[in-house]
Image (cartoon, rainbow over the protein chains, first blue to last red):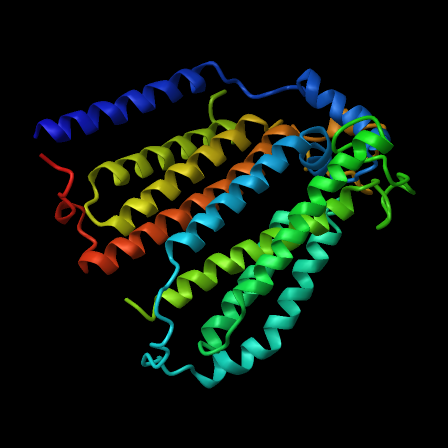
Length: 232
Length: 123
């Protein structure tokens, strides 16, 4: 009873915080100054048609690097935590995979991978980007795991892709210090014609590496979880 | 009523989702349901953040045929909350995967998902 009262009080207190926000919030009429700066100068400075991408990769690029680091940390902890000691019990009884799932996955997996690559290469032009594309690639691999549970993917390959792309992201950022005006500056490469695939300086390159990194990390998490089913 | 606008409604829905998630996190005894409560909490915060950046009668911050570069400041919504939510979604995904792997290990140890059974640190 006392516990329920405390929970109720905590919920009311949380609601109270947001009631304050709600009462003082009457909808925006105009962009705030920072957003206005990004909207006015973003296309000329960064050359990215998708302004969210411009904010994520260039104006707030350091945050994205931190975000990628956090994702790497959580993937590393999952891999460390779910490490299996004895790999000899591979003869677990598998559920019957239906013909429909098996056939559909053979058609869908390559298309989904291609779509993931499309999403992260076009991250500066259309909705999407490295994180979304990486998640699409990882979900295609999860579909492959469901359809073919015996399929093996080496942890080593995933680690190599992840390390190379993470390192390239940092090196591209450092190259900005020497070749352009600062860390993660996107004008190492020419800005190109606005709205075309080869534009926006270094953003497509960074997003390709982010996409590969996120895709391999999420695949690694899914692979660890899958391998642990043997022990449960 | 001035309060029944799109951004206010989505703000209220986000707050409701936050409260449901917090309630689930505090009252549920099943570990998986607690993880679900945490995810709901996360999602509610994302909805609130995006609705704060919304501006009426404006479109997504992507410059194309509909939004010309010169007129961008007057025709797009705030891109910064969207970039922040993009970051938050990815981190939420990583944290959820981490929690699920803890739950998996705990289940393998004790063969139960009830939080009451894990009383090793309780005095």
